[in-house]
Amino acid sequence: MSPNDNLLLQIRGIVREEIEAVSGKTSSELKYLRIELSNKFTTLSNRIKDLDIKLSKNLAVVTKDISQIKKDISKIQKDVASHANYFDREYLELKNQVKSLEDRAQLKPLFR
Image (tube, rainbow, N blue to C red; front, side, top):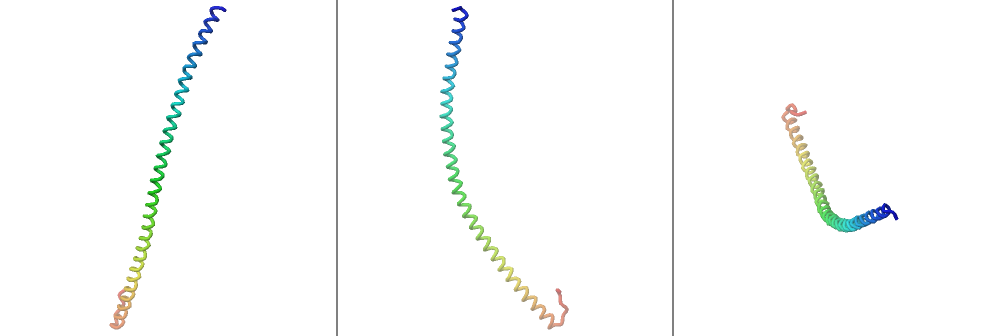
């Protein structure tokens, strides 16, 4: 074997050792990162579940509130219709009384 061949074998050996050392570190780093990501994923998954539960509870409350608001609006609409009908009847009665008085007194109609 020539000295160049011997030197080449030594260089190959050193390069191989360095590659193995680096790949060993990289593998252990990858395992650590995978475990860390798995833990973070689990934490995020739990937080999402908690938020989903809170959202469901709040949705139930809002749905109940909306139902009550709809009932209140319906009642207000009925009250407004009732008041409008009352004032319409009162207006018609008053109009008839004015017409009757105008006819008896033989006055010209004010609003026609």
